Length: 110
Image (cartoon, rainbow, N blue to C red):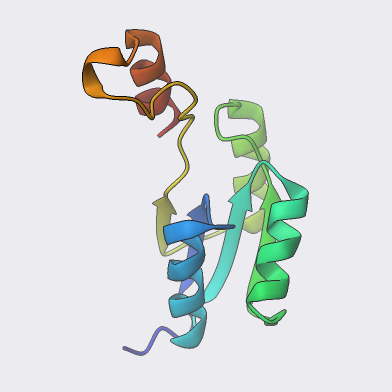
């Protein structure tokens, strides 16, 4: 697939599925911005991906509207947005043990 000139934002792109997707998109020629809350994790992701010129990183907490607005103002137009990030504290439990508030945080953070 030819993704030249394609701009993609991957929220939660510093690890797991998001990082794997970032790698694949970069390999296909896309410009990728990975966003997350932790600068150290974003730096580690950039290192793992080999510091490609087509990769940008952005420290942002997607639960804060002002930070999201600033991110979009900074990076400009996009072709695709992917979010693998979620506020999952308290949500990795057996279903009967999950508190409603934890489940709501997961949904609201998306």
